[in-house]
Length: 176
Image 1 (cartoon, rainbow, N blue to C red):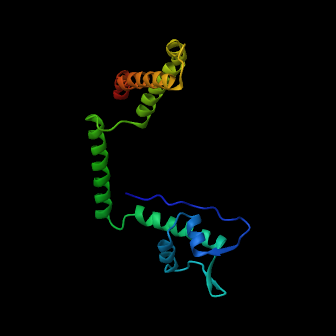
Image 2: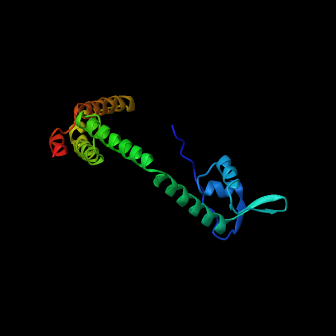
Image 3: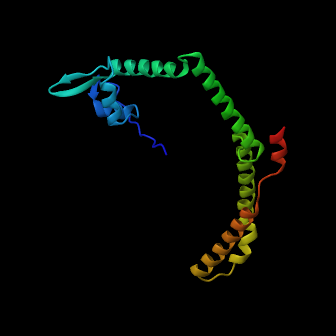
């Protein structure tokens, strides 16, 4: 499971920052920053016994480094490697198509439409709530009685929502 790293913003007026602060501003761990220090050309200065990163130069270097890294991954080193990557990509595509055909995979658009339908039904139930349940509340004499009635009403609404299944008409649209 990958861990998402938090990033922080650098004060735009600062020209030099510590290694950890520069790394945090790019979502890079302390260890990753130290690995970058070993790469040729990473700009770092020692000021008063502490290593400082010139922000503009380091940002420029890092963008260039990441671009070169991406190109290395994309450009095959030989024809066999290119063929292997193509076969792997075709296999991934076939697996996705199979998963979709077997109903194990749906599109984001399909999920959005299902959620939209569910939220519309929820909205309708919530709008009907006061009129439907107000008569039950009339004449109650205590907070526990009102709470009990509200809990029963909410349980009823939740039951209605849990009975709401997928909109099967969207399945037909998805197949087209």
